[in-house]
Every structure is written in structure tokens, then in C-alpha cells.
Image (tube, rainbow, N blue to C red; front, side):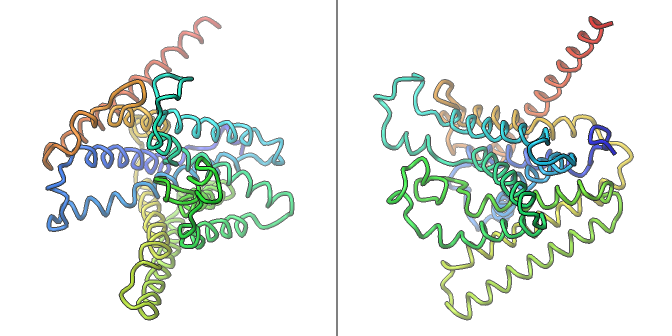
Length: 368
């Protein structure tokens, strides 16, 4: 079946929409919620913080799924596959936008007043940088598998394990002593990076494994067996994470610094993400139709991400609301702000898609 005629995968649309809207609410509540409400004595805050810990893995995993699904939907050799060039451009665009969102001065070519802290902020590796790098790594792994005739699944699995397992060791190295800050920022959190490639690129590559499977097994997601396989792998990963914790306590006692917050946690999060994908696939099987807005939100994740970041945090050229009301609202006010921003983002997408449709109709009328 030609890639152009493949059916849209409903559960992927659901996952992409869920991922970006979770990110919107997480950023909004974190921006406005007062420090006095950030206490684990509150079960609501505890639940919210736990859920927020899965937002980035879901967002990154889903990006890897969608990208690799489209990449592997074409059977051409690597350099003849049209998705390769598009993927490389996507990598450049994401990284460029990531840096523009953190640009340190409103004067594009005058950096004389930029402080050391502003430079560190500018070089911080955020979600867009990481996803861009993750997509580039997927292209590299795909090329390696084709060039040396290796099993693609094995190559991707090794990639995931590498970025997950190396996390503890890369984080212990002061990369700023060995590399310029712009490059060191990609390897650890020491310069302030939120999402260095260790371990976060592993989630994007892990999504690539599922995207590859979906491309090679058309409509497999329409059967419950697909979800059960995801649940099985999810259970295995969660079991591994608990084994690591047990090993940690037996060897290091109550010292949680070595594994509990690193290797164990990344496998646990990946397990939960896979379980959520399986659940979404089961739900999608019951849906006769899906509202167009869900698909539209899934298609416009980059637009939503950029606009909500500017609204909350501003940029070198536009102040954000977070600058005026930082951590100043109660729980109800913060949740209300999150709901309002979600509604605004969904409305923006609806308007953008409406304008696109009108433009297509006008062009079609001119051609006729």
C-alpha cells in the first residue's frame, strides 16, 4: 500500500494531542503555582508532580514514533527516501527554534551586554533541541542498519540501552572542562540543560522502534494483540526497574544517589509510556470516528509548543506572563490558568486549520 494512502493511526493522534496538552498544563501550573502550595503533604500536588514526570517521555517517545513511522513507510534506499531530507530539515528547524526561544538579547547582532548567566540560558538544551537531535540519531541508526545490513530493531534497541545505561556515568563527568559550553550542554545537566541527550534521546529512539513496527505491520494496531504486546513489554521494563532498585538497596543500602533516580527511573517511565500507548490503542479500536480537532492538535504540536512557551516565559523580544506573576497563584488559580491556556491553544489550532482549508479551496477554485 502506498504511504500516501495509509490510514491515519488514531491512537497516535490521541497520544500526540495528549502529550502536547499535558506539557501546556504542566508548564502553566509550574509557572504560576505559589511555593506554599508545593508540598507533598498535598496529595493533589503529589499526583500532579508524578504525572508531570511522564510528560516529557510521552512527548519525546511520540515524536519518535510519528517520525519513524513516516520514514519507514517508504521502501526506497536511505538516500532516495524523501523522508530523510525532510527529517534532516526537521532536525535543523527544531534546534534553531529551540535556540531562538532562548535568545539572550533583543539586539540580534549585539551581544556586548549579554551576561554569563544569559549565555548559559541560551545554550540550555531544552525539549525542542533534544527531539531534533533524537530525530537525527534515528536517521543515523537507520543508515547504519542499512549500510551494514544489520537488524534494524537490534540497532535501535542498542541505541536505547546506550543512552539509558550511560546516563549515570555521563552525568558524573564535568563536560564543561572538556568541551565548549554549547557542546557540553548536550551531555549533562551541569550547565543547566533540562534535557541532555543522556538519557532523554533514548525515549525518542524507543519511539522509533514502535514507529518502525507500525510501518512494517500495517493495521496491526487494529487488533487487541498489538496492545497486549505493548503491555507485556511495559511490564518487563517496570520489572527491570524494580530489580535495579532492589539491587541498589542491597548493595548501597539507603543511598539513592546511584540508581534510584537514574537508570531505574528511566526504564520505569518508558514502561508506563508503553502501557499508555497500549491503552490508547485499545480505546481507539472502540472509536468509530474521532473529532477533527484531536487530529489537528496532534498535527500542530510544534506550533502549540512554541506559542505557549512564549506566552508563559516570553522571549528576548516579548515578555511572558510568567515574568509578571511568577509563582503567585493558589491551586485553583493555577489550574484555571492551565485550562484557559489549553482552550486558547486548541482554539488557535482550529483557526489555523480553518485558514489552511480556506486557502486550499481558493487555490482549487483558481485552478478550475
